Amino acid sequence: MRVETIGLATLYLGDCRDILPKLPKVGAVVTDPPYGIGKDGQKRTTGGNGGRKAYDFKGWDAERPARDIFDAIRALSDDIIIWGGNYFADVLPATGKWLVWDKGQRINQSDGELAWTSYHGALRIKVLNRVELMTDGAEHPTQKPVKLMKWCIDQVRGHGAILDPFMGSGTTGVAAIQMGREFIGIEREPEYFDIACKRIEDAQRQGDFFTGAAA
Ligand SMILES: C[S@@+](CC[C@H](N)C(=O)[O-])C[C@H]1O[C@@H](n2cnc3c(N)ncnc32)[C@H](O)[C@@H]1O
Image (cartoon, rainbow, N blue to C red; front, side, top):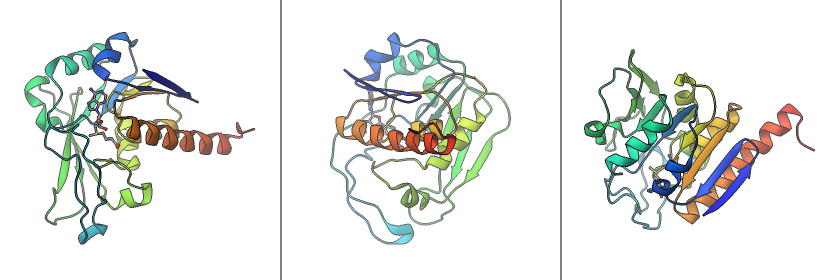
């Protein structure tokens, strides 16, 4: 297992099934696990909203995480947001506050995505076109926009570190660092882990520059 500390972020290269049981309680878990729908290794597309890059097949989206991973996540915090909640509804308790990402498009791809939260309260909708990813620079086949993850962290009530056990290219980490929050990230694929380290390092450096903490 490799561990990188980058400013407010601690990043683990490894399997979250091994690492989660060793972590202390955190302020919140904000994550986007595999949904088990084969979105890994997509081919290049062109057309509406700029199309999509091609990605190598790594096999990580062949199945969704088992129930015990969700139990391990729920043991670490009462404040949880999980994207793809509609794929995991049978292993998560019923709550009122779901989050909706309306992709602002009505083309032949999904109109939006759903996140389960541990909160009771009103459902919330964020309209954000997926072309945001072009501004962020897409480096992962199922990358989320930074603005979307900042909106999620805004909903979080718990103080303390934000944990993402399926961090992919590190979008939750970039959002957390830009918001001055501590972050713990876990990723199993070395290629995505390296991308996450780089993106989070850039976010940290920019933050240091603006606060005057840079040397
Ligand atoms: C849906 S993607 C996350 C994408 C992320 N939201 C982003 O913006 O880049 C899920 C990630 O979880 C990783 N993963 C799958 N199983 C894992 C495990 N057991 N431990 C750690 N990472 C895992 C995959 O390699 C994949 O990068």
